[in-house]
Length: 294
Ligand SMILES: NC(=O)c1ccc[n+]([C@@H]2O[C@H](COP(=O)([O-])OP(=O)(O)OC[C@H]3O[C@@H](n4cnc5c(N)ncnc54)[C@H](OP(=O)(O)O)[C@@H]3O)[C@@H](O)[C@H]2O)c1
Image 1: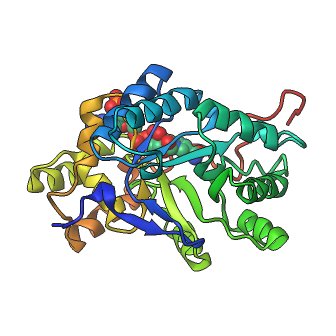
Image 2: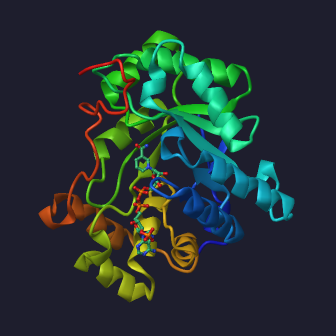
């Protein structure tokens, strides 16, 4: 059992700032659901919200934060807000404007963490995008900066070009795709790994997960959240259902054994556990400006 609530546990980034290890993600939530899930998460103790320009809900996340602050539930300083620079905004001259638009939508003067959403290697603008985030940090618009969906070769390029190591790398990561190699590469560089789609697909019904959940008297989603947390991974499951938002944050009452973590990790080799569910970052080339043809 942990003495500190998991929603209060933080991980130290390579720039010295602290990031809450457990939070809420809002991808694919309608603006209304993004508002209600963010409110429910904050009320349940979450201090970390992960959004993106591309999610179309920065305004409602910002409104939920403003309302929670106005209601005296939290202060802005209590909260950790992440957003992401969209692929189209890697176009020359676009990033600075996109950064200001996101801040205006969020109603914030800075975010805690700004990420490049995807490298889009075929477009080849990720070094310029990284320089734009370095500028945003220098201007106080982001406290920390990082990347998402980056792999060793593109990490090498942005670090070699700028000397600035990302604070985090947010990648697809769940028991069906546990990314041992990229996690080791991130760790070697001092980069904290964050998990996207942390619950995977179909894993909540997988017999290995349901058996461990039953043994602890908890929900399978809570087992998967603990699998991430106990390995030092930063995780922010998403739900449009406030009850599930609370459930996913309520993981203080049990701990997985090393043997249970190993059994869950072994799902990586189980064809029934799905493997990768999202796009391969080496190939992904969506969301580019209209005038770019692949
Ligand atoms: N950087 C990137 O490229 C990238 C890509 C994808 C995601 N992300 C980030 O990562 C966050 C999390 O990933 P995700 O949204 O893909 O998926 P996820 O959190 O792994 O799973 C969300 C799905 O699980 C269901 N769910 C959640 N909690 C549940 C529970 N307790 N019981 C049963 N079902 C539950 C949700 O349905 P209901 O809503 O119906 O509960 C939804 O269908 C995103 O929201 C986003 O912030 C980033």
